[in-house]
Length: 118
Image 1 (spheres, helix red, strand yellow):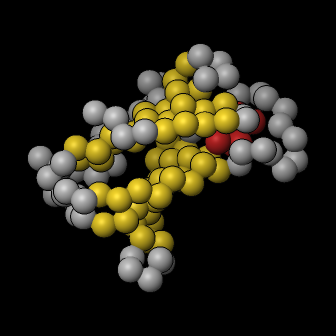
Image 2: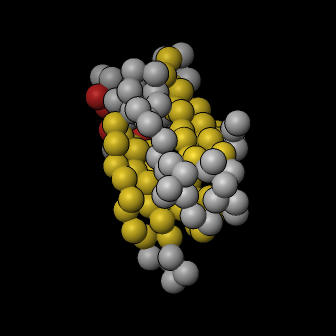
């Protein structure tokens, strides 16, 4: 059963990125973006459910946008203008619609890393 999920950890504070806004888009063959979902992460830094469940999973190109600067400003950090990292834009592919895709993000105001999780 296919599924797409995410989890964001705030490495500057050593905690989940509760309240961060995340947008999921599908990219068509011409590169146009189609927003599928925008949500706010829960207290564990996760969506309350899958970003895509088995019924919605489809092979193709996708984009996750993580509103990093807004998250850190809401935590009370004073960031330079413009911020070093504003929005993390992560383009990725789903090759197997029946597969499980988990996209974790580790983020601070000045760095981030990601990988395909399990």
